[in-house]
Amino acid sequence: MGFRDKFKNADNALTFNDVILLPGWTTLEPDEASVKTQATRSVSLNAPFIASPMDTVTESEMAIALARNGCLGVLHRNCTAEEEVDMARAVKRAEALIIRDVITVNPETTIEELLELMSEHSISGFPVVENGDSLAGIVTWRDVRLADKALKVGDVMTKDVITGTEETSLEEAMGILHEHRIEKLPIVDGKGRVRGLMTMKDITLKGTYPDALRDEEGRLICAAATSPFDLERAKALDQYVDVLITDVAHFHNKNCFEATEKILKEVEAEVIVGNIGTYEAAEDCLTKLDGVAGLRVGIGSGSICSTSVVTRAGAPTLYAASQAADAVKDYGADVPVIADGGLRNPGDIAVALAVGASCAMMGNVFAGCSESPGRLVALEGRYYKEYYGMGSPRARRKRFVQDRYSQPSKAISEGVEGWVPYRGPVTDIISEFVGGLKAAMGYVGARTIPEMWDKARLALITERGAKEIAPHDIMRPGPNREP
Figure (cartoon, rainbow, N blue to C red):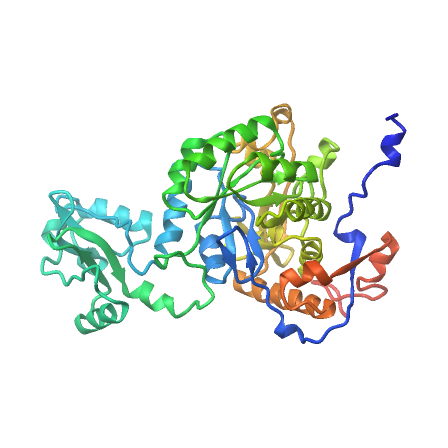
């Protein structure tokens, strides 16, 4: 093939602004559409939204809020392995019917040490154990708030502890907690050893979030990012998370594949791999890696990513999703495709679903929410939240995601820093996006996301056409303008 043929045979790497959904014959109203989908082979979502593993987007607070609303947040890895594990533990402890990973103290713990533990773990009470794990008492904030910090837990703890057993049902636990006006019920075995903890807070939350994603033990589903080359981190996270995501910019790489093979063999959590951008990459993931549970696709499309500018290499998310979805279909694989990058609104998500994606991963959208860890600032009368790419100088200074980008690019930034408008609670964003997505499905006539794959049709649109379909030729209200 001659060099000129590279132009003739070039693919059309289309992205969201290049296409539009065509309306189709429909027999349903938007509120009849279902937006349930799969994030992995076994993890179902009640809405197809996933928060990116970025340190201005997803830590435990965001992951908890999304899981409670039927979506998924992926904990970032721009921190020590211990810090990421702590975030995962916080997600799992948030609503467990029986907390298994119980944090305990002993009678010799000082009040000062206890207060530090309360602050560190955001916990108001602890079982007190001695001789390993035998229950000796319980200590709560009420016991220590006015106590001398030099005293020990044994001096102030409640020794006559009301307990439950493994056989204690939810209803029985509620009755015990109410009868004795207590907030925590230690679960002990026949020898008085602590085996878990039930709390009134967690029991109450069970009925508050009916759409929450929960594991078999009633805990919130948790996902976390890891480097393919950090097997020890992956194994440490595996004790707490349900899903692991390999977090590299270009996964279709011999070293990434070989490293991920080891992770797949060593962990029980489902593993999503990425990012990838072509049919060949998806094909190799499906045929060379045994046990892959999902494909994360899209390279260089994120609002905060400059990879395709710096390197002129990339695979726009819409193009990448269609490529990967075709590979999944051709091989008959039960592997969801996660469109990652450049999705700004429900219409973009609808288009991604139309070309075979199962769900959408977003950073910009969630970065502006209350639950994101980015700083909140006021600029010219409006609120914004901090947001930067994982290849930006700011993220790279932490040095935990240096291997997300290929070796040569470590000398150059592949992300930028900025601010995004403050959007409020993530619950409001999910409600808005679900409504918009259902409206798009109504236009297509698709009751489910698999029907979107079959029924949705796309049309190409010019740059001028893209401007025409947006609001135009009007003066819109702003902070300093009258309508």
